[in-house]
Length: 80
Image 1: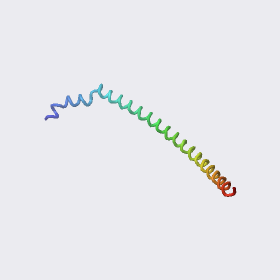
Image 2: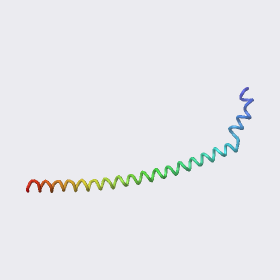
Image 3: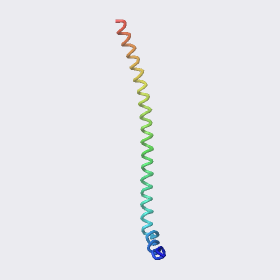
Image 4: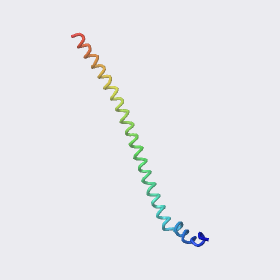
């Protein structure tokens, strides 16, 4: 009985075209922002992965140079 009496109000609140249109537009705006955020996040991940790879390569070179320098210093210290 209560639902029957309030049915017009409930239907108006849920199915009013103007309000539905607002929700629809807000959802599309939110979806567009989410897609833009996803694209940006993917780009950041890609760039970070590239930077990490370059750091690893540079780190390997630095490690090789340090080992070589250590060897040369040990040779100079031991045979001086």
